[in-house]
Image (cartoon, rainbow, N blue to C red; front, side, top):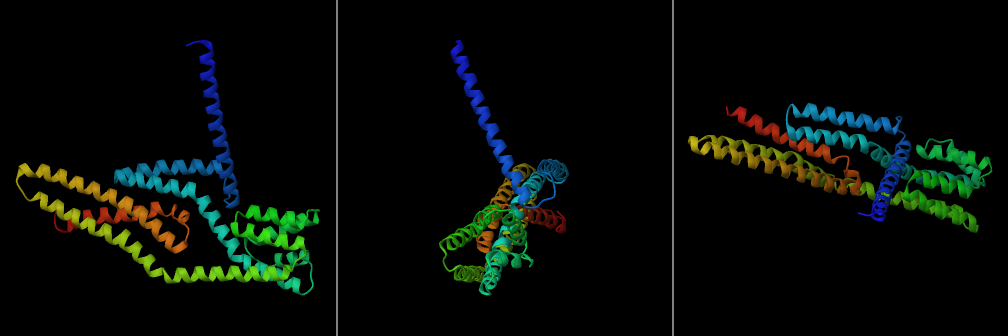
Length: 313
């Protein structure tokens, strides 16, 4: 290998390393911003370290009982630790969007009485509208410092991470710039958003029975039945000659492994489907998947062991 080839190899290695470093740096910055947005009073590095320590402890404690359970507990701790900022940020965004119609109605009512936009924002900021109130107060402070209403509202919508808030900001800014009927625009948007949330509440109430049926059948009934089947197989395989007992034990272990794999896969799919039915967002199921799998797995292991003991096996 000549000097030019060595130079080329070194250059490729450096470029790949820089790309990975930039990707990790970008990911860490996004994660840090997410932790700050979720209002977690903890340094992101401390959160990651505590999560890793919790994973190790969960794995060690779980391994004293069951190897598979130790792995599932470690995954659960990782999901809760790393996924908590995502869960809290989603909940905060939902709160933004749930309070938004009331804020728009409040601002519109103030404008109807003859007040300006700044006065309407000041009046709305006096009421507790959750995270939106903090944003309104920050907007007022920025406007007093010389920032325009359009720029301040646009920045607030971007910081909220809410797609609905961003769309509302675009419409309101366009209406104010064009000198259009801002009051009518606010009233119409408030009514439309309320109608959407009314439909979502109706969907949740109408799908409650299906939601509960899927969870109970998939996470409780199915592992209960599999646990009984596994116990019965173990008892039947013990009844026989010494030559067949070894083969029977291996067969029971194979069925036990297949049952566990099925419960893990089915538990994940069940939680995903039930969350999609209930929330309408598949991404919200990520933090619930390990919990569903562990519940299903614990029911299966408990029934398998207790059923045999009850029968004196």
